[in-house]
Image 1 (cartoon, rainbow, N blue to C red):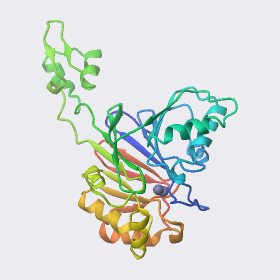
Image 2 (image 1 turned 135 degrees about the vertical axis):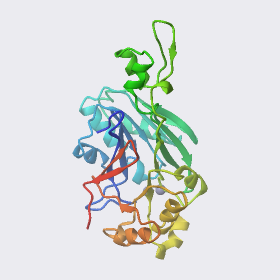
Image 3 (image 1 turned 60 degrees about the vertical axis):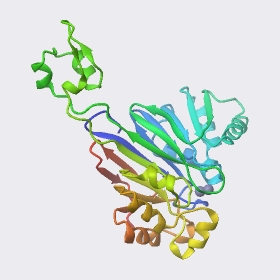
Image 4 (image 1 turned 180 degrees about the vertical axis):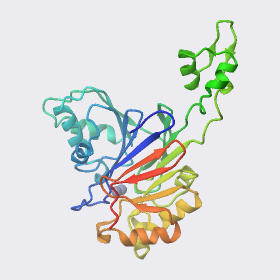
Length: 322
Ligand SMILES: [Zn+2]
Ligand SMILES: [Zn+2]
């Protein structure tokens, strides 16, 4: 689970990994990034509500939804999710971010819930840039190259301080107690004698930030390469294999090879390919093509979970291997 320092920081749950048309084993796209008690959902394709329930993500958690673009496979599940949350009596507010067309779309969906929603929903029509920050996790949207306005999302966690060093704190006269907690959380404190102590005095240097990038649907583009630069995990659509690169170009998608090229040129830690066409069945050809260029690639599957440690290490579970 998400936790503060030291252990698992971010937990990624792949609810749906199909592209365009859901199949028996793969739902429409939706991913939930769990951090510090939050569920941050990336896209909400058809029937996301059932996947959400099966994954046990908790219908009354702090939550926001980030929509990449207004194509059906990325938004058709919003109405169902709002309905489910209302029937189950969610009370925490919900924020939804995405292209401005999302505002009337969510209103229309809310109008289908005949008893009304039981919680406040706020929808934001966004532009590229930093959207918000939850518990040291910053969410930034960047415009990508699909058909119509489409965004990818960059999620960056920066621990506010390094490791707290109790010996050093004792040495400079900070008494054990609440002041230690404040310093460990990156806040300055004042001792009774008036001395100001900065967290830098009693903590090791800050670790490297952790970065997860989600492409949404896109052709390869510079804004994506820039966002992906040095990411621990790049979650990329890979709708086609190279034999259909003409379709990828025409319809605004990636091939598995182009996703792997982005991963390689942006020096990411791991590439997760998702949203591939049902024509590739279990996706082996998509995976093979990507791995030939970027070996540290895995194929996303529904209900796969990935945990990201504070030191950037990843652990994958529920992973379909064949
Ligand atoms: Zn799509
Ligand atoms: Zn699309």
